[in-house]
Amino acid sequence: MNRIVRRREFKLEWEFQAFSIIGTIAFAVSGAIVAMEEEYDILGVFVLGLVTAFGGGVIRNLLIGVPVTTLWSQGFFLKTAGISILIVFVLPIAWILHWKRSEAYFDAIGLAAFAIQGASYAVNAHLPLSAVMVAAMLTGIGGGMIRDIMAGRKPLVLRDEIYAMWAIGAGLVIGVTDIQKPWQLFTLFLLVVLFRMLSVYYKLKLPRRSLHHTTDRNHNGGQS
Figure 1: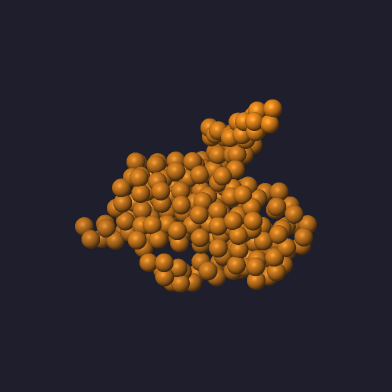
Figure 2 (figure 1 turned 60 degrees about the vertical axis):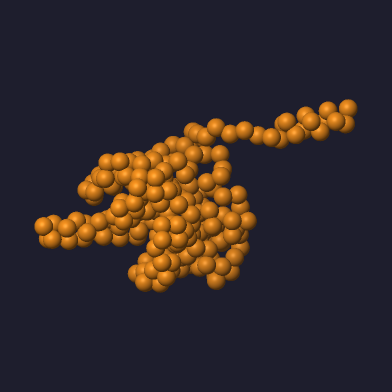
């Protein structure tokens, strides 16, 4: 029995590591590209890249009670992010501009990988379904939100195309079905990336209301 439990823990650890690596590289590259677009110096590029890669996990840990200091024990991921940022920084500008056109794709990869990682983390901690969904969302979107705010941009999650809902959906699937097999998680990863890119391509939006037109009419009516 103990052997089965240890095997399951090893399996979850392997899956956690795999999606952490994918998300770390994708978001580190995304943050570095945004920093270079905003003409940050090399220190700013590294700071924004690292914040993008680890911000979501830090926010998740704060909310579910995991010590933030666990970040400093993730030396491998810090090195992975640092190497990814350095590679992007020294690449030819033409390559970076080509990657810049794929910014949404890198965000989709990071979103999917970290949403699954965050949901798996919450399931392994035996948290309720609502917490699993929140952990998936915050881990998936947290780093990107901090990146955009630090770069003086409107956060991607608040833009027109559906973004955070795909992370919530991934958390719902993992929380309800408790899928664990690598091919199942990888299939879910591909589906989240696909749906995110489809929402960008077709400009799918969540319902919204605007106060601009009402404010303008009231303002004009008052003047007349």
